[in-house]
Image 1 (cartoon, helix red, strand yellow):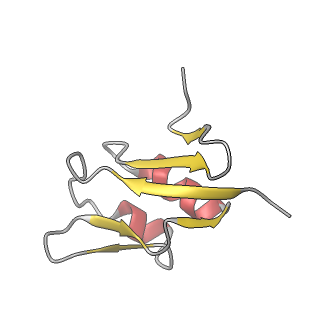
Image 2: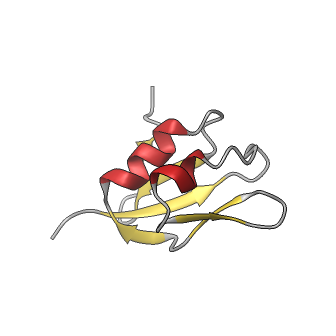
Image 3: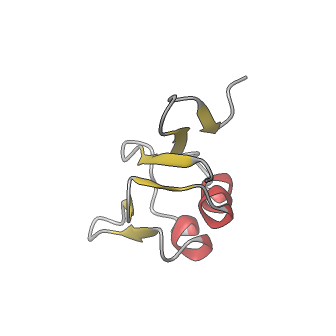
Length: 77
């Protein structure tokens, strides 16, 4: 069984670029205020979600391992 991720979007940072929706349309949506929301905060690790986080121009998408809370993206320095 693979890793489980917890996905959060920092809406104070999100600028509504929709890059997350472009890369992972099943995993993100924009609300009426053009703020991103994860479809499921807890999900199986998958490449489209990681691509969405990496493509966000303001790094508003935070991914952590669900069990340990260890950062997946952005990586800790």
